[in-house]
Amino acid sequence: ILIGLVGSEMCIRDRFSMWLSFTKWDVITPQEFIGIKNYVNLFKDPLVIKSLKVTAYYTLLSVPLVTCIPLLIAMLLNTKVKGLSVFRTIFYIPSIVPVVASSAIWMYIYNPMYGLLNSIIKSFGGHTHNFIFSPKEVIPSLAVMAVWAAGNTVVIYLAGLQGVSKQLYEAAEIDGAGGFAKFRKITIPMMTPIIFYNFVMAIIGSMQTFTQSYIMTDGGPSNASLFYSLLVYRTAFKQSQMGYSAAMSWILFLLSLIHISEPTRPISIS
Image 1: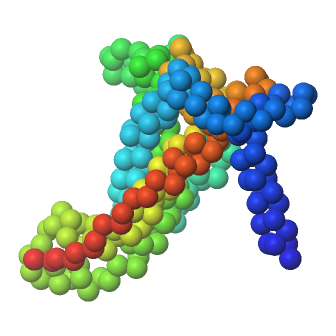
Image 2: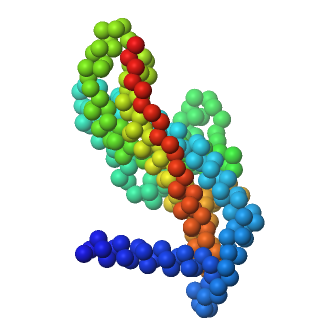
Image 3: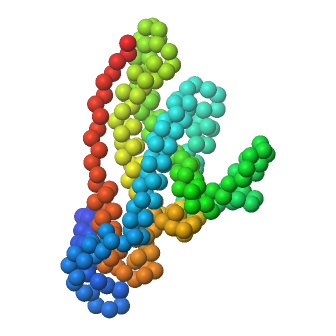
């Protein structure tokens, strides 16, 4: 019954947002039906185009990082070493830290004057950086920050690695395969479905990035970190353009439905 009620509420909410996307509404005055005008204006709005470019740039940078680095970490955690449970906990804890708290921590790390990262760079004789306060560095900085919360991805990879048959590795060792050969011809093919799943989830998550930009940069500097979700929020709750914001939300929904064909899984040990 509860599932049915929740599902019904979601259907009603989705239908209402779809209706809103064809209207002009500022919450106070009555809704005015304007057809597809909101959708037409979307592709003429320079801020929308800017936010889509920013989101795409962030996706291109963050998705490879949060897909590949957690896999390497999971492979390290899958080895038999002392205190392995402690290391697993250390890598997982950041993923359960609230995003607001994580953003506050990284604001200190990225601070150009007294931040931890610049202090480390200066200790090695390097030049300081502005990081999130620089239009050129803000998106790469936020992309690196995304790896901080990849603990869930590490756990998923770790579960997949533990499901790979050890007999395959033993047979490869008998054939004289080295570590890289086993990784390329056994680990990667056997882990392909899990890698694909994490890849898709990383894309969806990057397209919905909001909190980091809202708290750390507020879309700046010079709209360099104006993510699409942040623009949707501004349009709805700061400019009271609910209809236009609903249209933007449906465009984001459609972009999230991009289908990526799953690659085949050839397994070759030789």
